[in-house]
Amino acid sequence: MILLRSIVFQIGMWAFTIPFTIISIMTFPFSPITRYKFISLWAKAILFWLRISCNIKFKVNGLKNIPKEPFMILSKHQSAWETLAFQKIFPPQVWVLKRELLWIPFFGWGLAMTSPIAINRKAGKRALEQMLKKGLDRIKKGFCIVIFPEGTRIKPNEIGKYHIGGAWLAKQAKLNIIPVAHNAGYLWPKNSFIKKPGTIIVSIGSVINTSAISSEEANKITKNWIESEMLKINV
Image 1 (cartoon, helix red, strand yellow):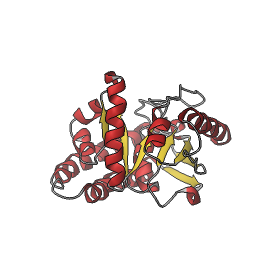
Image 2: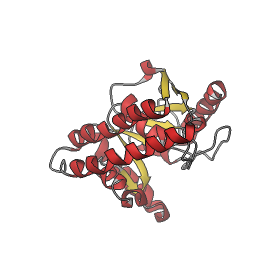
Image 3: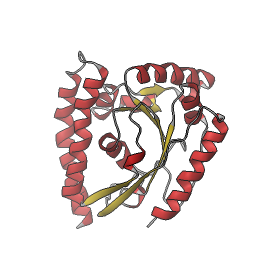
Image 4: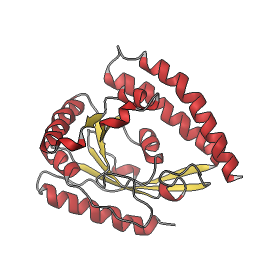
């Protein structure tokens, strides 16, 4: 039954994604925020379809911690699920991501319309300069910024290296950090076609004020909070 449900989800997702992407490309003349609000309907629709087809729900703790002004989200990365759910949970946002994702047919084309901060990871110091320049531009346009500090999806109960880039960008851009933990990897594992029924838990931490601490300290506080929270929500 789980395999059948996963097949049904995949078919429905692509049947919706292809025509929606074509329509999304037509929003190009509108402002970035307007484009985002329209394109994020795709993620919300896919989350609904995921609940109907695979019986995957989610619960959010700490909604009161979300600021009203733009901020930096530094989050655990276990699944493709959080890239969808964050669009429903948080205000308009952009992601720092590798530019190659924008080359994926349909999905990447729609993603490009959401004003992401796409960087060339092989560019070294120049990549940081690109990230800061684009990040400041997105903040002025009213977006929050999402970075997965471990850089890639990590399996449940594993800890990756927390790269300092996200904390550094938050410090340079004068943004507060909101740390986020979740256990989506149990139900929608990394690179897995199979999606298991259940309820994903998302925990949103208190604001980490970057004004009086170094990037290194902000990164350490973020890691400690996320990993301690993961011990509470792991199933």
